[in-house]
Image (cartoon, rainbow, N blue to C red):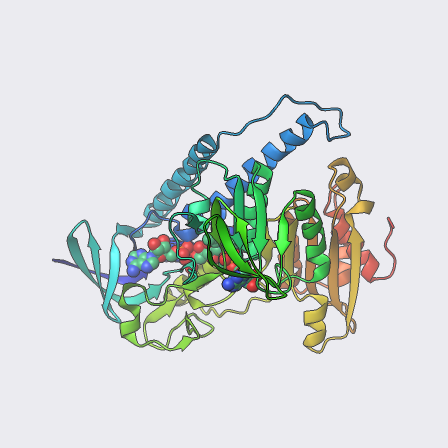
Length: 463
Ligand code: FAD
Ligand code: NAD
């Protein structure tokens, strides 16, 4: 067994770990990043990127199907469309491979070493890395745990055969005729919508009384309408009970049991942090529920051991992991940094998309603020009309006393791209007048943001 030393050892090359590695390398810190999978983590290999590729392919296919059905006022017609999902998968895998190589190249360019292998903690400063039967022992001054998360498995619906996780769904080479989705959260609705557009008959089984509970009813209403028009059946207050002969056994709100026919059952009931990966448990780190406990510099309860990303808590989002990774590298280089973000934007890539940054009206009131809200519907936005995208709105939530922007939300076609303006406004402490006073290009959907600000000031112009 050979020995290596370094100043910083990062376990996991997902968005948290690889960004930490790149920034540490740029700052001249002797860094090793270890992962037993291709670099990029869940996000790049089986998460954000593959799911958005599938969603794009499904959108394109759905568009052509609509033209073929003559179901468009645009005067476009098309012959009977078909999709070869295996070819779509090849295209998606090509993007993932390019990005895998990109991450490895960026680490190399920054001067950080990427090592393939499975890491196992020996103590807080020593880790064994095993790959293809050979083992290297690494001693480091500082360790960053960035081991991420894995899909939650239901004991009565173990993954295998008909029962698949998001990873399985993103690797399907054929569109299932009947897809049953257990869990109406982010993954269930993003992937469920994509397969409905690809031609599956989709049923979503959700235990709670509504889907996407992190967003308010006004934001989810257009998504529910679109699911209905796609023929997706959403069963709330319904529990999955197990696998039957023909599909999924469920218990509905009234206690009745029945079976829903399914070729595939996609289980998306959340993700669990990998706080037990690589013998982490032997370090005896303090935890918050299933997550590793961290302070505002991502330090765990053991000196010299940091943790970032999904393993540290909600929201389990790639950009949170990246921001933590960049911050930790700078702290190790001696910069004065603390986690003082005002908000972490959240985007749900359903149809239409939902974006939320900062506080919703209800959350702001619950925090004791007296609030003003301004809302502008896309039905009054010219650009949205030209894109047949009139469903949805932009909403601004401000503090009544001084018009400080507390939150920004939107639902609509392509609104994920508004997340940048939303974050910037909140992070920079904008007031309503700042947004109302910034000239927004015409004709764009982003004008709805300026109009929402005008509405909050009591004088929307286009409604
Ligand atoms: P991960 O990306 O999970 O990376 C952890 C890495 O650690 C892995 O590569 C793993 O192999 C490695 N590892 C673990 N243990 C060891 C060990 N002992 N030795 C060596 N290596 C180890 N988030 C968004 O922000 N936007 C989205 O659109 C989005 N879409 C998603 C879609 C799906 C289907 C899924 C599943 C997730 C999605 N997410 C999305 C969530 C996002 O993927 C995660 O928040 C993000 O990947 C977390 O980054 P991380 O660095 O904490 O961990
Ligand atoms: P989720 O927490 O978003 O949704 C899980 C849903 O399953 C919830 O609505 C919950 O009520 C339901 N549920 C739980 N147990 C159930 C049961 N036994 N039967 C039926 N329903 C049940 O989890 P997810 O969709 O698995 O996604 C995991 C995480 O991945 C997300 O929380 C998010 O952090 C991340 N993610 C983000 C994006 C994005 O940013 N666009 C996309 C995908 C995933």
